[in-house]
Amino acid sequence: MADLDLAPPELLGEATEHQPRARFALAAALAAGPSHAYLLRGPRGSGKRQAARAFAAEILATDAADPDDARRRALLDPSPHPDLVWLAPRGAQHMVEDVRERVIRAAAYRPFEGAKRVFVLEAAEAMRDESQNALLKTLEEPPEFVHLLLLSSEPEALLETIVSRCQAVDFSPLSATAVEASLGSQVDRAEAGAAARLAGGDLERARFLVSEPGREIRREAEHCMAAALQGEADSAPWRDLLEGAEGQGAAAEERTREALAAEAEAGATRTAREAGEEAKRAGRRRRTEVLDLGLDLCASWIRDLAAVSAGAPDVVFNRDRLEELERQAGGIDVTRARRGVELVQDTRRRLDLNVSEELALEALVYRLERVLSG
Image 1 (cartoon, rainbow, N blue to C red):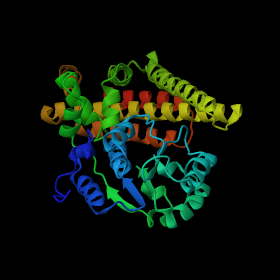
Image 2 (image 1 turned 135 degrees about the vertical axis):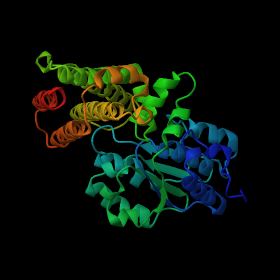
Image 3 (image 1 turned 180 degrees about the vertical axis):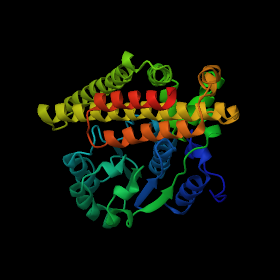
Image 4 (image 1 turned 180 degrees about the horizontal axis):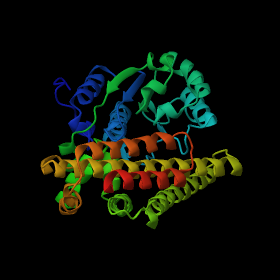
């Protein structure tokens, strides 16, 4: 570990190798002896989760009777290592009791094996103020064997008192080239290139886009745009986009119910009502994420139409749909395209205010029809 320019192989997760600043910071921490609290902050899909798991594995391997086995178990997801506690919100927020029981109170107990315990709080910004305030004492006076890793895509939502007690490790958005490479050779090259650019540096989003559900969301967004361009808004193309988001929300809700049922069998204390509400929150959250992705894809399609119309196909995001874009681009000028993108972005903001999703999408497609088809 003397050469801090090179992180140990275990620290090189799929995305971490494209994060030189974070890689250097974590390697330096392992070389000097890790502190008690870190805040890994940066956009979604930038590799924070992979880096946190690898960093935790290295900490737990320290002074373990069998370092390789400790590291191997810590790297599994989910991990069976008894001294690695990984807490992720199953709904829109972390449950206060989860933070109290699984982190604050559990941190008082000595390691089950080895010399360290690691607690990871994924999406730390989803903690309520009550949870954050309760966590302060643990951050201020942690037992010597405890290390806390907070992961956040929205660190501005954390209390300043929380942020100030953690060492920050910054992650940048991944480049399109890095995301494309991470998707692997099993994905069609043109599709991987499009997904990487449409994801905006978010590896998780790119992976979804090359999955069958993600491909379907792309097709539904493109169908909305084709209907608007052809003056066919009366066919209600937005309904397919809504149904796709609803399907993803329902799948997320079911996965959460299954996970909560497994936790209940393992002895977790949570009422049936609490479990049901948490599963519904997870479903709503996923539905909202996918619907927002669909609108973002609509905006990207309009942008690409303008690029093709202007004779700049090399900057197109949907590079695997270039022939269709060229067919649709006739007569689209930059001013109209810019107005179309503004309408989509305005609809995304309105959905944050809990307006009717179907009415908002219906209004959007009719407005786009007027702007884009003339």
